[in-house]
Image (cartoon, rainbow over all chains, first blue to last red; front, side):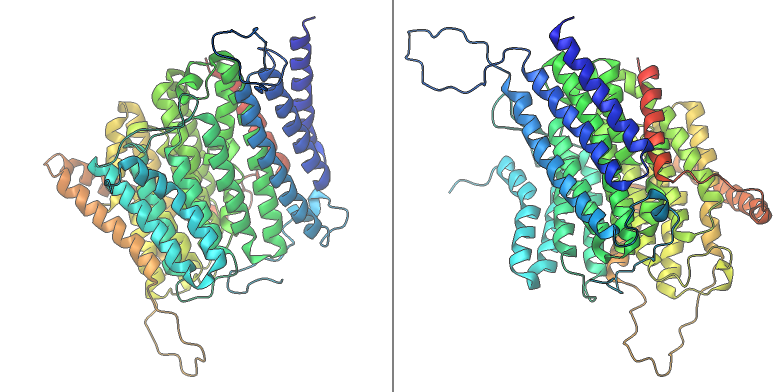
Length: 133
Length: 492
């Protein structure tokens, strides 16, 4: 089997596992982790897409002298790599925000079970009341 | 010094909200004025685009750079962004806003403005995430336990679909070597389906939009106004842009729109809570916005202005339960807003909603236009429930310690004035005898809708007539899965 095809399949499996985890897990923390599994799979996918044209990092170490002509090196495509770097940063910050909220929610139900939040037993807040700090 | 070019002005305008947010953090007393300045700048840009004074396309940073298109499609959405954010700022002018509210509002405003003009998949991804994160923090602003859960739900769903969207973007790049929207249209069906799942969920459409009613209904009034007024439009604009270049999507999107409109209407008709009724109606109206790319902008503008006004006064409803609605008199400011806002959504001339609706019907082929009229009847029946409440005569309350709130908040007035003035402007622009049948049709729709409302009223007391609760977290993820799988099979 082609190595790229195998890696693609593995990434697909990781995405599906993440999605099913998000659907079936009752624990909020595990749901967020499942989402992270999906996110990591996407990062891997972009790295794989970038590696189709070559494996070497696309960094120019020395300026080639004019007219001499440098040997062709198969470098990785820098664009998907640049794109996924942005996505990694966004994913990380979202992960951090979600975990902060989960820490706060764990005061309501330390077991973080989905059911205890869904039933609507939590009090509503209004902007004037300001909520509790 | 050379005069400022259009390009410099546009870049400055896009950066302004983020710089202002940064400044507002350093100088909190200036925050309101800075927020207002951002909204004014966006309004001016929308006017400039309309007048053709600004370049319609902007290439930044060479061949692999970013392309922005502040074109005619974006103009109504930018105006909507300016008016709704401005109204929220004005509405809270006399009240102390909790900590970072205005700062987040500016970031949200900037993210939305960029999302409306971005035309490549990755810029869209980044701006949609900025919008998502700032909306998440805005929902959290009350810091109640309930809002913690709602915000968590919102961001978790939003980030999951954006992950799927990124996979779609990767496939597009693999096939086409570009992230432009045109490349997405030329890419295979699987990539398009993945991108669509992300955008449909962000736009709050059909089963993938089931997160919307609870989030919009439970958030504080100001945040609901922002969410229902403009934030959903961030997903709609790329959908409209994509539908304009991709025939495969142009076939599928109207069907999803009609399904979404029907679903939202059904739930809104049987809803027992006033704010949730408004939120379900958003889901329904967003379905109508995506029916025709040509008419969608004006329709979104009309709906967004009216819905934001309705949500802003929802703060002052005496109670949210619709069962005793007719027995609770409303203050004049709430009562008047309720009538003007809902009459515009229903499509009564000369309000903006009427011209949006007739524009939509003109842009659609025959049978679909009739379907839109049928849905308008349902919409009338939904809003007729809010018209039952009587007007409260102003009586000075003896011994009221706090200064009473003015009957009309300036923010709501701004939105209502925009609805009326833009409607009158449209009336002068398209003035012709052809408007008379359209107005007659609107009156007929109104009458039939009120009749339907009367007919449905006894049915709501029937105990077994309950719709299933589709808003649990597994239902939301399942809805996304179903829509994604359906699109994968369906889109060709």
